Image (cartoon, rainbow, N blue to C red; front, top):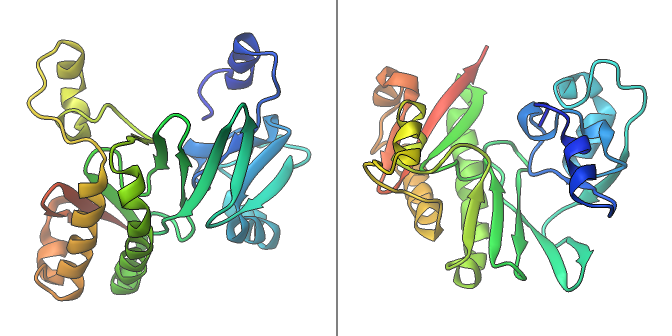
Length: 233
């Protein structure tokens, strides 16, 4: 979002109306959202936007005169696209408190945004003193999301960033295009389960705070899941 003329591209692809469904309110996922007539966003994020619009300055253009129609969504919400295609909303907070995943049964696909990372790394953003609280809330979200796993285990899990080859390491993205990738770790059900185990490692101090703080980018991992932290001032 925000790179190039997205709405112009969409107009060239279809004459049908196009609306925007947002996994979470970060600028790289909803910048220029005002160019769409209707935007689906978690109900709690809409409330935050209305209470403190300055927190969403990276979501809308600086010259934005008016907001689009904001449609609240939450766990179990359904966005009807026609032709039997429905996006079902599943909540999976952590990367942001109210991140969501869109489940598309018609195309056997999930659109996960940054909820479980792209590849194997989830970015957690919080103050240092909120580390345990943030990880505990993420674990709770993962546990609730587990109920969807039997249904979506074999779906395509489509993340928000990067080619998933090589653990999304940008230094090795060209390896994917040249057919020389070292390994493949796609987003899938196992990442969710390992991410929950990683939360438990942190909360039980199998991964100690000292280890976490000393690691580059405050990184830790368990199985096929990884997590790093960006601490706010």
